Amino acid sequence: MTYSNALALLREHGQEQLLQYYDELSKELKSALLDQIAGINFSSVKLPSSPAGRNLGQLSTVPALSCVEVERQRDKFASLGLAALRAGKVAAVLLAGGQGTRLGSDAPKGTFNMGLTRDLSIFACQFANIKEVTDKSGEYFHIFVMTSELNDGPTREFFRQKNFFGYPEDKIHFFVQDMAPCCDLNGKILLAGKGKVAMSPNGNGGWYISLIKSGFGDLLSREGIEWINVYAVDNVLQRICDPVFIGAALSSGCNCAAKVVKKVSPDEKVGVLCMENGSPAIVEYYEMPPALASLRRPDGELKFMYGVILNYLFRVDMLNKTISKPLPVHLSLKKIPYIKDGALITPEQPNGYKFEHLVLDMIKFMGSCLAVEVEREREFAPVKNRTGVDSVESARALLKKNGVIL
Ligand code: UTP
Image 1 (tube, rainbow, N blue to C red):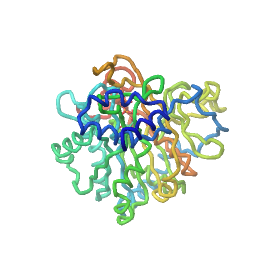
Image 2 (cartoon, rainbow, N blue to C red):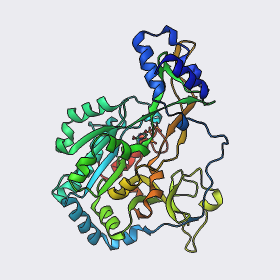
Image 3 (tube, rainbow, N blue to C red):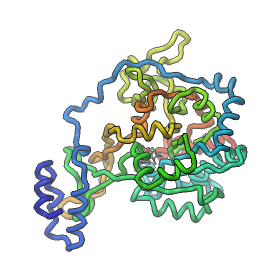
Image 4 (cartoon, protein in one colour):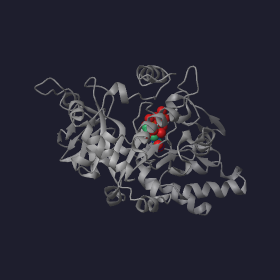
């Protein structure tokens, strides 16, 4: 792209500030900046004209298996799940491309040390749980690790240093997700350097597209992988390729399944799995009107009680059918380092937005989804913050409760 083409494009979208330091740049930086500008999808970097969220459709409850029901059918589900694992029909995708800004560390989140007397990274906690499954099934499943441009190198290096956590290296595959520009509170795209657009990972919703773009579609079909278990890096109690979960999904006939926990209160900040206009959907806590969130059933339980914990099973054929369906863009208010008057500013307060696609929006394309309730204290210890709610502190306490030596 030439300078004048870039300028015309930026003018069209009100983003000319991206060229304000152009004359100061070396030839290489000029050309790199023009390439970056050419790659921007301006239609997905727009602030909404009104601050109101989406209009909710008609909500109803989703098919669900409570903990009691799962317990009743545990043996049947476990043997179905183990058979699928032994047949190589299930793989896992670890979502590890996030920046973990709330944790306040530049290192990949999975490398964070949960140990107090020993080295115990989040990755290691998750691989310890994976080992329980592979010990039972006698088979290793493929694990695809999604990273971003910002943490790919250090993530791979950590896996190498830790000898792939004892897992066969040829079953672990890395792929890199896409990035999206960040803007200020007025929708102006920020510069991270005089010749560099501020970019951040574009959310966890692009994982399947990125997996396929990275060339792993062949491996999926060659190996006969029918289901993918997608999970977040930041839950230290995460149970991956859990045979009971797989068996429950298989016997339900649903196209996807989600591990859920019972909400502790109507206003707990978790997305709720439900049906919206007849399709499965996850309604974010801030989208759910308080009157609906606090509706109760005759037995006193919340009507919309199941919160998601970012652990899903998707049928691969459904993913392939829906891969080209556009996902909505979510805005996330963040602290974004930027250039002002030629100097790099590291803001103390959120100063702009990242644009993200979210995995939870893929659920509605699946047609059907089963909620499988799990025990919160055994499976859900999110690490979002250093202290307080969903923090290193709270996750350490839950690890201890589960008998993990820290
Ligand atoms: P979060 O939504 O908590 O985001 O990620 P984050 O970037 O890790 O943390 P903050 O908000 O900056 O503090 C939930 C899961 O989705 C992954 C994360 O790695 C985590 O497993 N994720 C998030 C991605 O893989 N890519 C992204 O672009 C964003």
